[in-house]
Amino acid sequence: MHTVRLRPAFVVLAVAFVTLFVVAPVAVAVLALALAPFEVAAWVAVAAVAFAGLLVYAMSSSNQWVELDGGVIRAKRLVTRRVLTRHVRDLVAIEALHSDLMGSLENLALDGLLKTSNRGYELRFRDGTKVGLVRGDMAGLDEFLVALADELRTNREVGG
Image: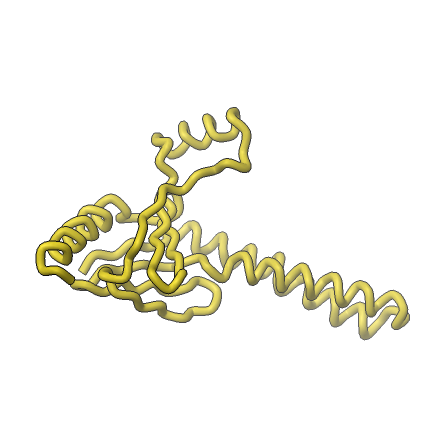
């Protein structure tokens, strides 16, 4: 079995940011509803809960770990704690991650920090599911990819 894990520092950061950007806005919404006039509190509560919901949605595809066990790929979602299971035979593409939204200077700085321009990969499955493998965030990515390539080769030879 080969596993890619979120680095401990990123787990700590995720907990901190979930607390800061999800729990805190919901707490603000509750306080506003309890203390402010309803005309003000309603708007504050809706905006705070919408902001928190948007961030939960954005983080819902983040993985704590991804493992390859034989012909099965499992990924544990960081926020929902749900374990996603897909078969290697259902893998239709492996795409490189890009940072198109950043400028050339930011990309150059990130390449220097990561010591590579390869940011990671996105595994895409037949049913539309995507699993991100981010080089800077996850440990064991290269070994995982070698094992995945071997599994894909074996799967192709068997006709799977």
